Length: 223
Image 1 (cartoon, rainbow, N blue to C red):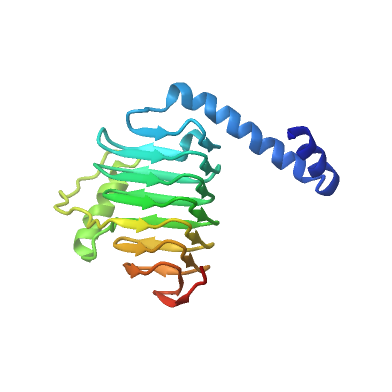
Image 2: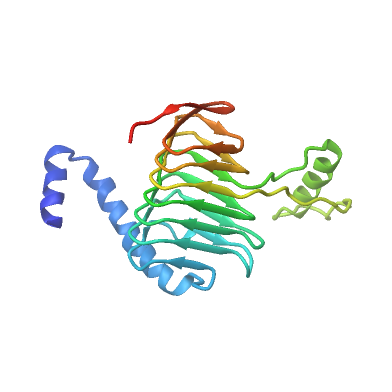
């Protein structure tokens, strides 16, 4: 069956064979790297999960957790980053393309989640709204950046924590290209988030077509 697929690709899309070969190699090579580099207490991948990059998963603290269920596919440019005591759960048979998930509380993706290119899911505000606090934060970030040329500048202490709110995405949801899902968003099963939509929070029922910036419920999709 594998050989038949390769021959079919060569016949109908000859230049694609190089991309296909590279992608297949990445799946196998990443699996080898994960066997001894991945911290399984923080990142739990079902044995059938396929991912293309050892950098797909970052659990940035002892309490951070990432769980990917059976038969899911995580492509090369997908990135799941979890900090503090955050939790990311991805249901079975999900396909994560060029997606960025940044989590400090909880992000749940249901079964058969399909993400397109350039998708962002973030359950917290990374920067203060106050320009004074944001100025302190940015100065601290720049001062701590490596490499540093010259002495580290003096900075003020930042008394601020990100605002977090759980994100829930149900089963069989399609996230279109260039979509953004922000904190407090709850998207019902069977929904489609249309290309370019920015979901700034709120509840959407099952089988919703969601579009716009800020995103709104457009209509109910067929079963």
